[in-house]
Image 1 (tube, rainbow, N blue to C red):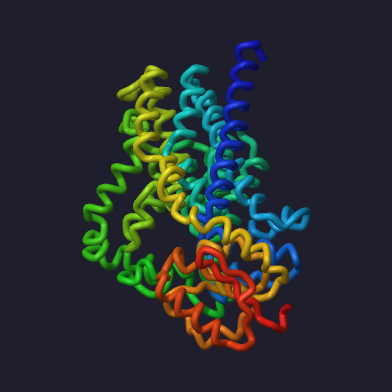
Image 2 (image 1 turned 120 degrees about the vertical axis):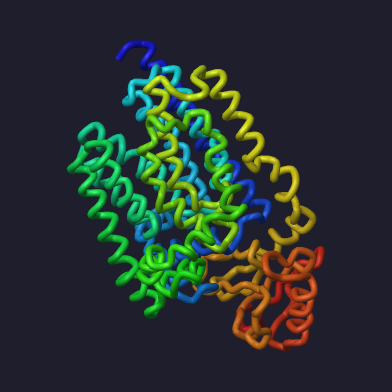
Length: 467
């Protein structure tokens, strides 16, 4: 390896490492500001903790085994980290590393496609500054982040003829979330038909289809008591089961078209492609075949969270959008080719769409009660059951039972808890100060509870028998 190549390798490695550190610090600070939520950080933190303790991983504020949700088997090996020391910051760290690793894989794929070293490094930075990467790192924790090293690594392995590496990458992706199997199958189709990696394509196509059917028809119903995957409800206009929805995609085109051609969907597509539109060309369009399942899932969903660059639902599209751009540059195409022009466009898109400004605005929402909430949490000394707000729950999920004081909670169940920690000024998601205040009043009137902490209208009640 020449000195220049070694220097470039060191530079990309340094950028990746620095990015992982920045991602970790940002997500940790957000958590410290009580901006994490029960859905999804508390969800994953609780079940990983329970697995590490040899207990059944039932999400207490959902009521089912975690494998009955997304069949995310990767949570089991992640629990080994909690055996070393149970701390939610493990999740922030591995998420940061997974997302930052996309920088290195993008650079390698760009070099493999014969881009110049300057262009390859530029593409690595384009990946890091794609707004979804930064935003997703801030949004709690999601095992879908492993799709970044998994999918990019699989493509690189296929192009280098490394079948063991390729299969390892497929396992990483498939174990992260069942819906990713659709992207794996689509990647297999692309590798088989367009990229001419027939063996690799056949393996991915077969693995993706097989795991999708096994997980949705066997694993999830088994662990959820015969229920369909929870996300099915987002497509209720197409059916009440996974197979019925898939069938109606073809049998009811009128309904499908009605939900496809909407203004929110147009806005979503603009958001998705705007940061890299300069590098999309019909001459190298084929990698975008792989993102069709992701687009279908997001465009047809009746929830707005599927149609932005904040949540995790578009992460599987990013690797193949980048591959399309790399292919365009390799063929001498693209609206922009100068690294400086590309980086300028990328930086403008990042400033416009990345949510770094939240640290100076909405992330300070609970600052006035932060100290009181921290002190109250420190007084929860046992692994007893807790009732609390959605934004406090992720700080108390190392226990079998945590439930949320939200609309629909039956106050008659108060006596079932060992602790109740309520923030009246900031009651959190799906609650109001009036509702939180009414719970405080009722707890004050229950003889089995003692008010053990009160400051800034943050209240901690402890059941007397737990003291």
